[in-house]
Length: 344
Image 1: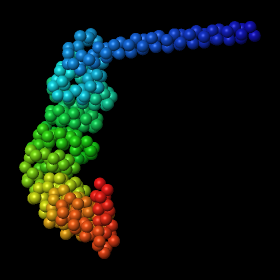
Image 2: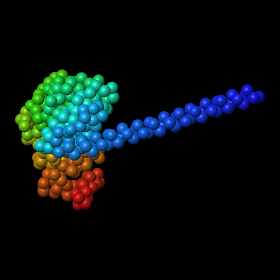
Image 3: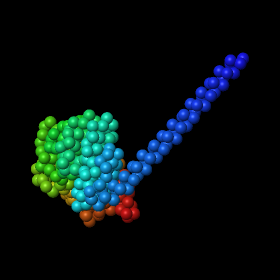
């Protein structure tokens, strides 16, 4: 009995010692953590105003300082514009931010590589390093993000090489591809146009290029529309986007293709063609558009009525006449659009 009590006492004492050691460890960790947090906050207060002013940063070149400089650069670089950005990036480099971001390009975490690439794309001297990420990173999201960042800065790799690396139109179907194409067309429109005539480039990538070129004034729209008109004759899921792009361009050489699209067997194509009629001010199509007010698909009827509102006084008169048509489907489509226009 005495031996048992002695053992219990010893075990209890040992547990108390462990508990005290654990509490001491927690207190020590808290003290160390607070000291690190205070040091980081002190560095932040020191770095922040000088980076924003583009001034050299007289801080120790420790790893903590480089990390803080990199974090601030990620946080602020997008907010600094114009001439101030050059001074900001120079100060960030002096503080070691760029070296830390280059290190993060090799991180095992995809998110770290993505953020580092997006930020380094703003540094002209690291365009090649970020291009390597855009072309060869093992993660598709990182490749696309790096490509978008480079394109925004006008430093993207060759367009054809980038399209193949990202798998645009095959593996990569993100809507961000359209934004990428717009940035590429802004800086190198003829390279984007060349994609349209490359037999190895998927149709989806060509349509993204078409959308981007439709907003550009730096290419020959007549040649572009000729390609789009030819592509619109093929029975594919991309035809609606082709007609929307034709409407956005509004080039006269696309009118024949748009008129043909109004008679398509697919309602998605008829709808997109009707929208293109309104956007390209194709007044000769008014009689056919009025007929589409009786289409068996609601969306086609809506786009037809919408197109009439965009076709000036003649189109609006046709819509008002349709509002009294004997066919209730036509009346409903016309009156719905007239009511929407009145509410607007």
